Image 1 (cartoon, rainbow, N blue to C red):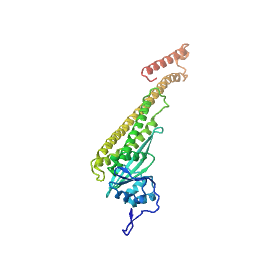
Image 2: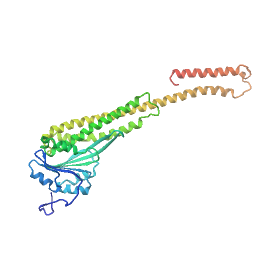
Image 3: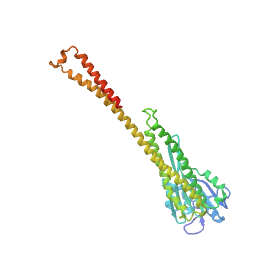
Image 4: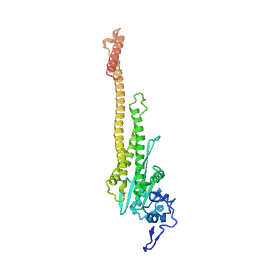
Length: 346
């Protein structure tokens, strides 16, 4: 509860305040204690309970809505600003005895081949954990139910919630990676499909996929450093009993990050191959045009010479002059055509 300015008895932080709270639950001894707990007594109830802590879940709260939570739990203004405004990179920061961690959530929408990115912020204190979710990806209701079904893990306190959230988000990275991989394989097939028409150009699709892969990498890769700090035991707020759990999450995260790097390289190579095919087709077209121009220009040259109508051109008075010139022109055309054909210009 927030204290008044005179340092007297705690008072409700903001009487009658309405916060965007999805759930507010008290846990003790690995079990949930009743239903929702009123915000203004949540921390006090956790402190009174043996091995108790409170988990508050919020979804896209405004600054005004978050004021009550801030005052109740003494959250740092900089962390609160990040939690309300979102648009942060994955990170882990310490503010006194409170840790603040940012996760980027990812959901791959297959029909549109689009990555939807959201954020989940976690405030971790000795007796509380606050999760703030932005975006439609990674709802935490199932995470809460699964964790409540695992009393042994819940006994690890707020760290168990941080692990459950991290595990859920990283699992969704793996699901998104599978969707991206399938679409890249389809795009590759189109690039190297010799039966596709020239109008079927996958360049735009490849560029869109590359942009989504870069978005995926920006969400996944930065999380490695914060998780590494937890696994190395650098965050005292994290219960040692959850260390092995976090190590497993880190392993899955690094696999997803490696796949994201591989996707980027694969798409770069596929784009290069597609551009090379386009260039090759353009060069083939130019060779064909050049070959036909050469054939026609040779005949044009002959016709142009005899079109001068000079008086002393001996062939003009020869009765076989016309058929001979036609034969010469036809022979030149056939000769050039066969030469270009042999060299695959036509």
